[in-house]
Length: 343
Ligand SMILES: [Zn+2]
Image (cartoon, rainbow, N blue to C red; front, side):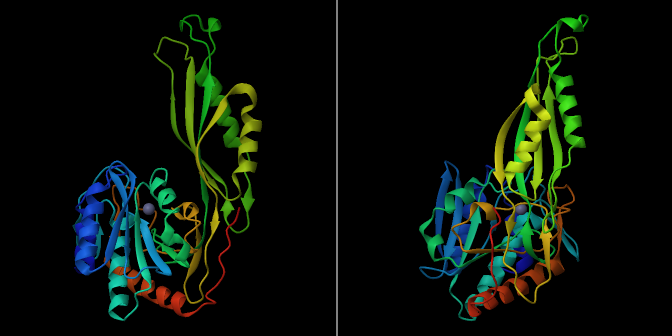
């Protein structure tokens, strides 16, 4: 199947996180029809990673995720672009990787595997499960795909997801002196967090904080007894200095509940490719057993997760050549570079 048709075919099967079963079956059938050996690795009752190989112990893997953020947007296209959910994050990437892998196979390269995970957009449970897979031990290089505008990412920030919870005392809103507002306490804490200077790292850049969700209270006429805010912090250092800074701000006014944490990661640098640091995180921090990590993919992270998600057809096309060149360079050149994991 041709590159753009394959992209649209994958996008035509909805796969919001938690609902990846159908697209996993589709990929299994497609790859089997091309002659790949395909394993579905169960992650939960209706979620499986797709693992495809041409030989028993591939040294190099191409990978990305099958899930998308909601809502589902079916594919459309014009001469320049393919639009819709997953266009760049990450079904266009799956299509480019399969196309590159098929071209490599025609040239006699069989030392490659394809790995497509579930749940990357939430807690990376697919990556965590496959990290323990026996094939990981033989993997030397893992080229992960996320929209990097086809640049080779040499670092990706970490992500620290947490809740801040406050407690108060309910009372009739006409008698506020009888209560204690958990929402006002939370707003004070959040204001202090906005004034806080978090660590800067010369390689990864600034730590940034998004207060993404605020919830609390029970009714307009009740002093709110509880409130919480969910934050996503883009880490440029380990989690510890950031968590300490938060504790110092919150003191005894509230509590932190940690939801998940991925540390920042340095990725393999390869000469001859345009390089940059990306601010988002990927499955890579959860795949430490899978060799040296690289990150490259068509499309822009700035349109991923939006209702205007698209990928340029030219970028898809270019990605195929980039994957092809990168794979050949890595398989042929043992000294392609050194990856370092920042902890
Ligand atoms: Zn993605």
